[in-house]
Image 1: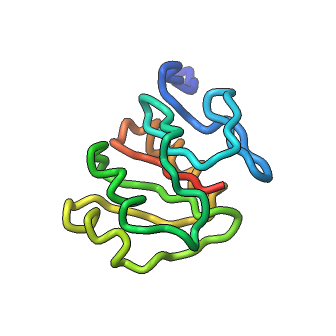
Image 2: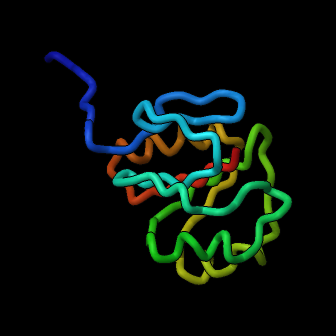
Length: 122
């Protein structure tokens, strides 16, 4: 049996990352972004972990994901649960990890056709 990797060419995935940027399907972004398998949202105005507010998390509610993979930058941080209480109330899972790990995890979940969102702070 011949095995080969199935690639969904229409799906948005992280293709590169480095200090101060990530690339999605070859397009480079140097600001914080939100990625779904269908599109990249560059209108999310979260710029710094220390400045996160409940509105930054409420942004995800209309996207209705199963899980949010939240990249907190070069180091893993955990925000106070009060900030993302609306997500908990809606039954949306959220995982916090450093941005490189978040990009890798998102790619795996997206390849499994999960309803996943990646939120990446740069």
